[in-house]
Image 1: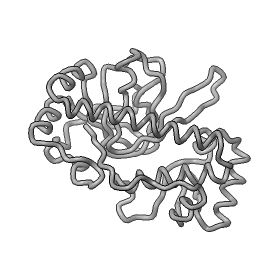
Image 2 (image 1 turned 120 degrees about the vertical axis):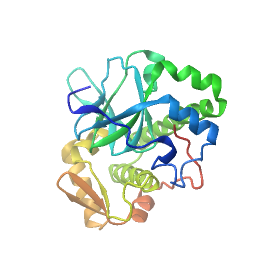
Image 3 (image 1 turned 30 degrees about the vertical axis):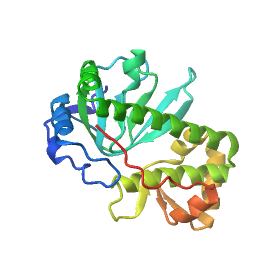
Length: 251
């Protein structure tokens, strides 16, 4: 982890977690909440552009994002980058290292981020003491697999216009659920390079695709961010619809 990351004081006790009131998350029982409060070891703040987890390294911690945006990516030996997903409040990161030892991807902050810190070595106590929370961890891993399936379908079979529409609609839907917009315009802090590295397109092709969506008045690109003007239009163009009514667990 680089020097832009630093441990902070515990500003958000679990009992007053800002994510708990969000309708998208399942409620924890008093017993579960008490356990998670003991499981949590502190909080970590990371500046925009900071590395949270680095591919090929070992990290003794797991993190749940409390605020901010980030993304997961892998690098080829020549430096080419593939972004595999975007991470937001409620997402748990670092779980992969529990099984493989070393991280198989890097997580970078798109904006300032604040995260809950958990000790990886204590994860087994969660499985032993709270089967419901253990199921939640399994759910989180399965959901990540489902998300990657959908992204693979997008890269493999959707047109460039459909790919970009799907990606932005998917990100915006998730961001809305966890309160990243909070009534403000839907502005996603990504560049066209981030889009190109996610969708497997050249930067030139990405720019042409962005212009087509802009001409349809579906989005407006401004510097290092994308403002969505018509989320329903993006969903319709991509042929994607979210699954409604599912309560998400988070730890």
